[in-house]
Length: 292
Length: 243
Ligand SMILES: [Fe+2]
Image 1 (cartoon, protein in one colour):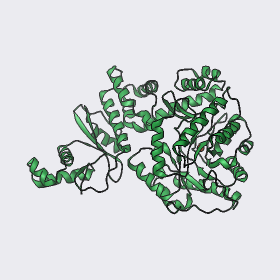
Image 2 (cartoon, rainbow over the protein chains, first blue to last red; image 1 turned 90 degrees about the horizontal axis):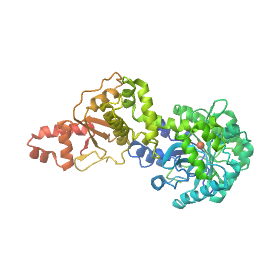
Image 3 (cartoon, chains in turn red, orange; image 1 turned 180 degrees about the vertical axis):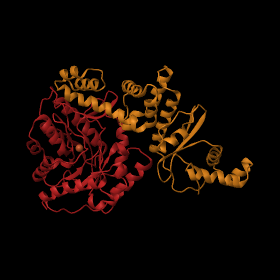
Image 4 (cartoon, each protein chain N blue to C red; image 1 turned 90 degrees about the vertical axis):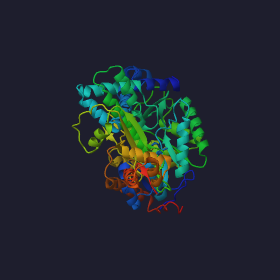
């Protein structure tokens, strides 16, 4: 296999899936087909009962990474310290290889949207987000923090630069990692009419710590990023292009809506892995937790 | 436009304080695309309500006013109680109090029983997420630390039990002061609920006071066998834990 660059010190973990409630039992039986697990932070923060038991079991059995949706890194409202405290407790309990959230604002003025609203690609927003990423990193200096490129449906009239320019400057100045969602690149490139490959080529390879792969719904006039369908061939092609350009990257299959049986999810993960292996060759499976 | 002005506009659009077309013109975006965000944020609240309060939703949809009542309550709830917590399910947390305020205001179709049902359903959710750990082993008779007592004007427990068995053709019960006991099962982690019977209340008191069966028999003047039977029954439900 080609060399596996350590991205911000983070290893190549292989091909993983999200830990979702309907698969809580089955995924532990399928450890030979899942290289790592991604935990949706808000599903487990401060939860007792079964989530708490499953979380400990997952941390025991798999390499873990955390992924959040409610940090609201782009909001003009100050970061929520209750949220950050709960996130710290989760990080300290699970010791993930890295943790991530999205470039967006998901709450502001005291209201949670439970959705990822886009930040404008402006100088002011860039300075603001850089400053807030540094605040988050200061709380967990030893665990890489990544921001994901979200899918977005509106392009603000206020934009002063392209999405790629914004992302490159953001991760460089904030010195954080990038969680590159390949499906989101595809969705945005279609919805906003840009060249997906050129977008990926513009990103700093050494900062891409993780990839997301997912399915979407094409409504004709717009593609909606639903995470509720299989990955389509053009997104797999874009994934191959990404790996050709930047080498092997820990890749996570997202499936959040209309969850299929575990076997369908695993077969999708196998397909993504096979596409990756075509490009980068066989790779060593990560050692079970506890032996690292 | 500053970042704050832009976010305020987006906020007002999704919170329905500004019309989508006006918001889109001010933001320089396509209104059809902007509407996606309003619809998403609305749907998230609806999902939280329907997932966490299914009995309440069913009852209010079956009421004489039917789906229109549920839909209009949902619209008013969206405006009155926007989500405040990063936990998605918590978007339903304010609904019992909201419904009670509707009852107090004399809203057509909203009943006292519906308010009790909503409070019960939210208590079920909180029990599932209760941060306490139920110990695997104990040295003395111990109360399940996830226990919640819900004092209500209607007997919700038998109604909820029939719902759990899949029955949907349910009539609201007659009013009667009742106490529901909700707790998480020690090993299976689901939420269990019981009407507070004399046996369960007695076992709760024994566990709370940390008494042995012998001490409880002496203190209550009951035969030891009756005390043992009560404690065994309470242990079987998961309400108390015993060595
Ligand atoms: Fe993603």
